[in-house]
Length: 351
Ligand code: CP
Image (tube, rainbow, N blue to C red; front, side):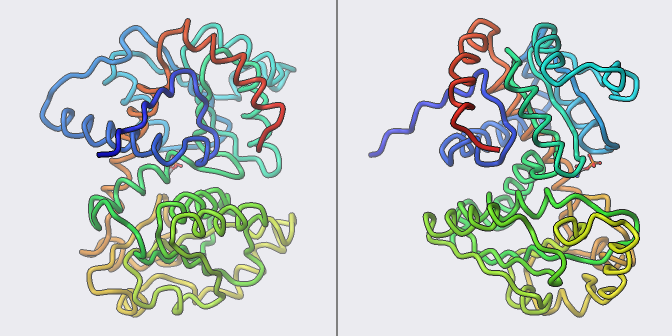
């Protein structure tokens, strides 16, 4: 019988979905499922007693803030909500200083920084200088905790083995704002390496980053899944097991907000409605990370309908984040030792 690999994530950052290997991600999901069960049964699990997490937000949040804060309390620790606008960052605190200083106060630093062509670089720079693990609460490139929650949710509804299950990751029209491309990017790279048949659908202007597409292709080739792109939402939905239609901005086409809005208005027919849901398998699930533009991205009848699992997804944010915090925010001594290795690794490294 094959032995389980020994997993030690103490002191590790989680910035890209691929920072954790498949066995490491499996360990996170296993612990998340256990913590969920215990939480629902009222069994306390103070794994991070007396530990602290800095939650640094440069962007609004409902679920991420609530679930990290609740999660740290449930693990016996404390999460400090820090709004960037009430810090001295605008008066000169650098990413290095934030890493060095918060890394000495806290056992973990979680950051949401979604500014285009900046957020991911900022988070990596903080991580380079932090003795404590750095967790990505969403940047311009990735939203890894959302996708861990999505993966747990898909497994709960479709079973543990996702090989050859079809997921439609589709653009949808929204008018509220140019949403980051991090959710579709993280979805395609994480789910392709878990063997799913990933179909990415978007109008031509809503491209994702070329290196992300490459990672999705590589993940699919290694896992026996598949990855393809279509410009037809109906094609993506046909016979899908999972549909994940959501809006994102056309940042790779234009940085002009007025032009972006004009481009978007050409594609108002890209909505997830009952007709499109009927193209998917009868037991297909509808997913959305929220917030959704109701009536534009999705019809009320779908998001509030029997195939929608949006509340399960939102709840699972809590459980996967607790698992990652419990596994990464270990004893300070171990974390400090890890930082040297972390810096060396980063020299060769990744985004
Ligand atoms: N899905 C998600 O990240 O929600 P918030 O933006 O509300 O945190």
